[in-house]
Length: 368
Image (cartoon, rainbow, N blue to C red; front, side, top):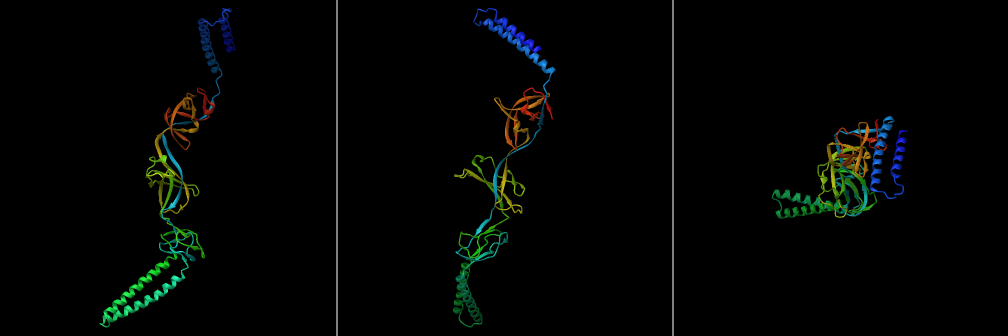
């Protein structure tokens, strides 16, 4: 009723101001000033009346949830996919081409350096080895016999020296044939575990072709690459979290190696984390590598979802005296859905994190 009276009074006032000179069609400065004065008085009365109405009939408070700001740890990570590899991960192949005649190991078997993993058909070389072995035995016996006789001053020293030279020559030829025979074997170049056997009896293979992979489980590492925009932002020794989603294993390590050069094609550089020997990690497993790039032990943080972008910048609502108040803030880094607050808020402020879409500046709120 009161609002209707005020509006009616305004209508009468405007009519009286505009009807003083019906024949004057020009809006003179005097008339304009008069109308502005009337409008100013009306605005004051309307505002007073609205305040009285709000007092008599208060708005229903909007239920909200808040976060009371307190200094806390804030960490920002560089997340990237990585893979496990062995520092000693070798594909063993024969030194000479041939056909596999026997495979002596299977996947998962532990082997020692120098152990024969598979044998190739080398019948012709085997025959030469046996023939040379007989010659070596004969040469040794002849040399030993002449040596014993010469010790008793029987025989000729020249004959003894000739026998010795023949024996040593036969021995070198025998060793050469043995080395040639070994070229027809797949030999473990390192001690480790057989990771894969890609040959079977009857397969033809040769140097650099199919063979048997051996991995040293005592020298595992996690490798990945980072874009050149991270150069200077990560250093050897930076804390790292490795998350193996398939097994649920999480490891806290440090960067062991950071390349100082960028690949000219990929525009990326390598980083590594040494693991050493582990039973819960295997070569070629994938994982998420999280490199700590920023840390603040006394940070004020708010959920990113609670931040609204306005013409004046980023804004959040806080609760002051039971009402919502908009505050312009300046944020820094973002991690795990939270933003670091650089300016605008202080410890103890109650930031509305749920229900903010339903409130306006000055609206009464109820904290749940």
